[in-house]
Image (cartoon, rainbow, N blue to C red; front, side, top):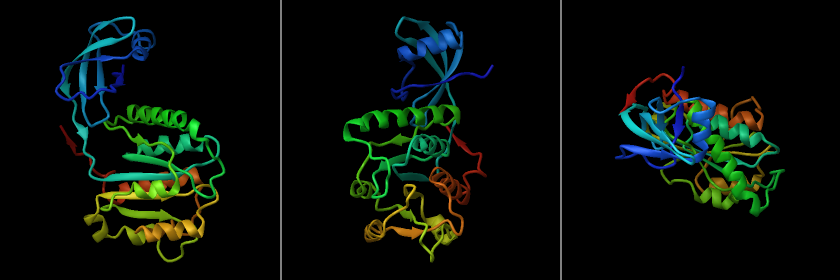
Length: 255
């Protein structure tokens, strides 16, 4: 049987044991039918993962003893995905795929052509839902890191979150001069370890939004002649960057 992987919301740094919350009591005891003395794996979302042994169950928690550290896959690059709000549950799919592929942060934001405008009072609920999806993606993909999903931001707020050291790319279907291939040259890839990518809603970006991003130091690029659905675009972009940086060809691990 595959050893269950459980997320600990508390840091495991310098810990010998930890207590898992009430939601894990039912899952481990009733669903997985585990008992005291059984082994599980615990990860904290910050690159730390350990073999662990269930010490005891209580009504509201599970106490586990931490054992040997499990080496985590080394993250050589940082990718932030700024994704314009989309219709329906497409954001769920985007968050899941981006988290599985190793995006460090996802920033949902309102674009001029975003069809779905979520009221401010609903933002926390959406953020909580998307963060939960990111947690599950990390668990399922055996990543010891968890993608952070921010609250929904305005377009200017999103631009202000970009690191000055990042390679800043905004993907626009009307761009005819630069493609992602043009931007990911050997020299660029060797020098850059931080990527900030911006993907629009179903209707794309307005020319004014493109102008503002260029003023903020972004490069406007396209994916070539292929026009992708909004729920596919981010996945393709992150995959291309990861591939070009050699992430998919590396099996190196660090403790």
